[in-house]
Amino acid sequence: RAMTILGVGCGLGARDGGCADGPRALRRGGMGERLRGLTEDLHCLELQAPLGDAQTVIPRLADHLATLVAKECGRGRFPIVIGGDHSCAMGTWAGLRQAHGAAFRLIWIDAHMDLHTPDTSPSGALHGMPLACLLGLGPPGLARHPPVLTGTEVTLMGVRSWEPEEEARTSRHGIRVMGMAELKRLGLAAALAEATGPGDFGISLDLDAIDPADAPGVGTPAPGGIRADELLDALAPLLASPRCIGLEIAEYNPHHDIDQRTAALVETIVEAAIRSSGDPP
Ligand code: DIR
Ligand code: MN
Ligand code: MN
Ligand code: MN
Image (cartoon, rainbow, N blue to C red; front, side, top):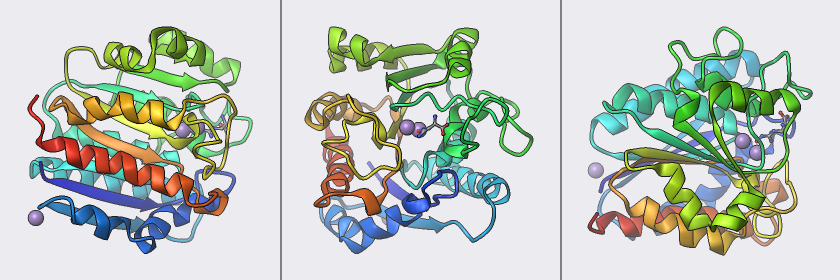
């Protein structure tokens, strides 16, 4: 299928702003050119956050990204958003909600819950809030009205670092939580199959969900994560599914990467999405 990669060069939502340089570093490393060699129809767009404060820039960037994502989807193209800090999710999934007629589930793969609001966040960082904003929580400008998703449409996977207020929100909103222990018990592929359900779904992958040994290029590493090869094996069939409506890969921070390990992983995941897209359902 036709695909569009949208790079979002923004790090204002994180304490360490380095992921603003993520999409640019991937482009300079030749990712787009190599991927275009694999497929007839791949477009690459790149947004760069302007200078300014996070509270002003991020809502605008999210609106811009939502418009672009909706436009690409409307043309029948599969959107792949590459961050940038995870605040890009506010735009990605708002855009998909606009463009996609049917309901869909969202699989949020992350070491963190991203369910903070300014009054519960210890850091104040907006990349800790995107899922809350998609549920309609948070401050004006960031909270999505009407909500993009309801909690029962969301599954959190791989989480291992959160604040009590976030955990309370998972119960209050009916968000399914699959921590590392549950992923080990079920196996990642079975867990993902359960999370997607029988209908359409999107995937938001925060690279810090992956073990820092395999994905060191993130701003907030958390030990004890999902191994990269396990994730690739489990993700490949999902990316091949016509029920998969969008993919987001966030938090790539080239300044913390070691031997381009994380960059290579991002490329391998996108490559899996491209290669599998000709597969029968
Ligand atoms: C932390 C880190 N919970 C915060 N969040 C991250 O600042 O809110 N989310 N890194 O992906
Ligand atoms: Mn074209
Ligand atoms: Mn995270
Ligand atoms: Mn996140």
